Image: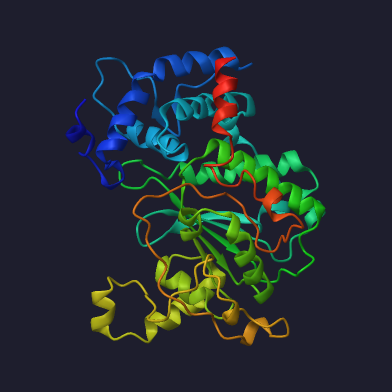
Length: 369
C-alpha cells in the first residue's frame, strides 16, 4: 500500500508518510498479533476492536478504520512498531479476560452511579462528551467496591467509544466537574480508584481523548495542577483545560455548544439570548463565548495563582494565552485528579503518561521471553 492511499478518507484518516509506513508494517502483523493474543488469553479473544474487524477477509476492501486504530497504538508507543504490537496484543488479551466486549450489557445500580457520570451530546467538532461529577459523592458507596467501580468506569468509556466512527471522529472529550468537592474529599478509596482507572485506560485505550476539561476547579486545585504538570509531557498538558467556577459554563458553551447537561444550560441560554439574529446565523445557531480562554493546566505562573483565602465563587479567573492546538496528539492519562495531592508526585504520576507507562526495554525483554 502506498502512502497516498493512506491519506484518502475522512478527517480522522489522514496520516503523515512516517505514520503511514509504520501503520502498514503493523497491519501486516495483525494475523500474528491475533494468534499471540489468543494463545496468551485464558478466554477466547475477539477479532473486532471497538466495532472494527481487525481480521477482514483477503478479498475485502481496505478498511481505513483499521489504520486509524493501529495509528493510536503506534502514537502511544512513539511510532515504535514492536512496542505498539505488544501493546495491542496485551489489549486484546485484557479485553477477552475482562469481558470488555460484553460490558455494555452489565447493569449497575442507578442510585449509586446515576449521578456520577454520563455520556451526553457532542462538542462543536462532533466528538462525544463524557461527564464525571465528583461533588457530593459518597466515596464508600461509589469506590468501596473497587472492582464494581472499575467495571462501571470501563462501561462508561465504552459507551463513548461506541460513538466513534474512526472516519471523521476518532476521539472524545471529557468534562470532570469538581463543583462541591472539598479539599478532603479524595480519601484512600478515591485515590485507589483513580490510580486503577489510570492504569486500565492508559494500557488499553490509547489516543481516545482529545481534550479533558476540569470544570469548577477551586483555587487550591489549580495549584496542585501546576505542581503535577511538571511531571507530564507537553503534549499531554496541552490536552488539559482547567477552569474555575465563574467561567466553567462559558467555556463549555464555547467548546461544546448548547448540547450540555441541565446544570450547564442556563449560561448557554443567556449567551444565545444576548446575540443578534445575524450573530446567531453566523454561529450556526450555537452559542459561543467571546471571553478569554481558560488557563491551560501547564501554565505555571506563581503570581497568577489564587490566594488560599479567596472565595471560589468570586475569585477572578486566571487568564492566559489561548490553549495551543497540538500538531500531533499524544495520549493523555485517563483520570488524573487535581484534588489528589500526593506526597511523592514523581511516584504518583509514574505510568500516567502512555509514553512512560512501560519501560521499552522491559517490554522488549518480556516479549522476547
